[in-house]
Length: 300
Image (cartoon, rainbow, N blue to C red):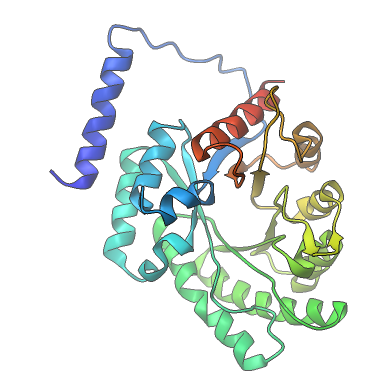
């Protein structure tokens, strides 16, 4: 029995024990969820780095353990597999077996798209091509990239916009979006990244606002609520970053009610990805605490 069949049979066998003899009743179809919940792979980065689970396990656990039906991958955990069609097809099959939707791939370590050196910038753009193609194979809608650059404020706008425009034009031919996350440096300045979006001015470019990544440098932290509000007009995905929860289940560093109001007031109704990054709770507890909080907001 191969890995995929084992996962599939094991899941439905356990489901049979859990629900045997019970009549399944559908939920009230008049209830409308304003957003959907997905799971970002980085939430389990410690388990993945420690080899306790692998990339395939992540798909299975998302559905069987956390009862979530959509995933956001991180290229770090299958970095050498971007062009391995057999591997990507197995990912697809496991996702299909567990009825999990592949949403996007978060891409790091492929060069700076805003590198001041033109050749380096073009090389970084080309390095991302394989991930655009991998996203297409997996049925994702986007890849997430970084807008790292150097120099003065306006120079970085120009350089990052140039690299992102080139990549967006390539991705457009494949049917994939290019999303930029606030991820350190000037990209964590909401006003700067919004200006980059306007400068690129392409239908395939967008943002992935992260609730927690607003540290520009050691001495400069951008207001997370202002930043998310500035980035939401361009958002094609949202990252619900979490670190620590109090006894009432509220995130200590981010007012989720306030933040989700900003998200929903923008008109966004797509997926909100759980991305637990803390250390005060286990990865599983952190994921479930984040999920419970988002579901509470959904209900209310």
